[in-house]
Length: 428
Image (cartoon, rainbow, N blue to C red; front, side):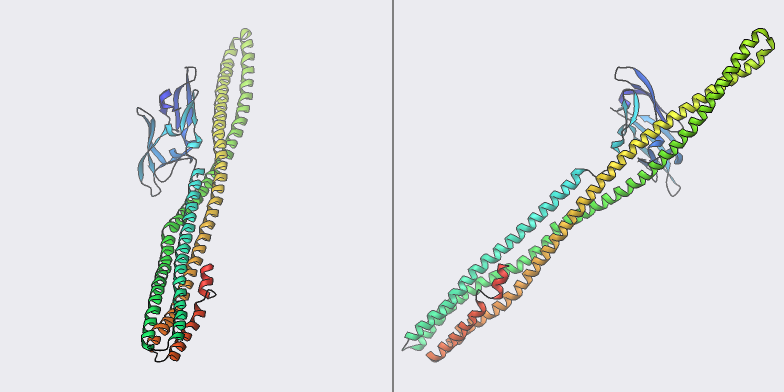
């Protein structure tokens, strides 16, 4: 729970110890202390949670209580040597756990949540689905259009064949027959040419649609993957830095514990020795009055060593508490690293997915360009057939000449047959 609302007499010492009387679960009040330097640092003039020793580059540090929380305020030194006012809400990461001030480590550890990579997965999947829909739509529009155009072209060549049959039966009024059949063929070719133009326009528009998709939705998805990768890389780098500092701090605290344990043991031995001397002098003072001076000295030594022993024990306990906090922090940092690495792998997979999609669309667009080239050749052949079958045919003077022109036009039909490269490309 928020420590401010269940505590009173909240103070800050010069060595960054936050103290408060905290209410326990049974309603009692307990004095508790936590050292802010163990998890609060200075990052270029701003408080940095998860760092250390903010007080080394701070002045005028105070805690102020508001209606809802306790705020730490201080003037922090920046990298350029100037000073800057800063503040941080302590209730955001310190709680009262049954009368003890405790650090809520999970609040400030860097973390890429599972939700972010899931959202990214959804974004990329949606982008890929849109790309597939785009490709399918383009294929359908082109194939449906070409199917209709091929049907009209087939009718146009059928018109040429029908004209040949009409010429076989013509015996008189050749001019009227040729003009009538030329108009008939022209009507069929005009319809087929119009439909073919629609197909060419559809192919050209399809190329533009692919480019627009690549430059908008696919580009946005790719950029979002890259931004998330950068964020995760920064998180990993920051977590590694904190992990290194935390490991160093744990080792340093262990040295402090060992040294203070040794000092405590020595002080305990001296206190016992002084106690023995005090007892001895006390017994002797009953018989020898002049023993009172050594007795007072021994008693003073016993008291002094007792205070030193208690001081060393207090330092050991404080170091152990700080070490426990750092070990807990290290564990969460390790978990954060594992989570970040998993997120990084997911992002790499998503990036490969967008790269494959980009390659697929590039290949698709290249196919459209090839299709456009083939359609241009196809269109030229179609116009040659139309020119031969209509324009040249109109000016033929004899039946034989008319038949020869129509035969030339029919020979172009092989270039426009279903075995043509264009048809194969459409199938692909």
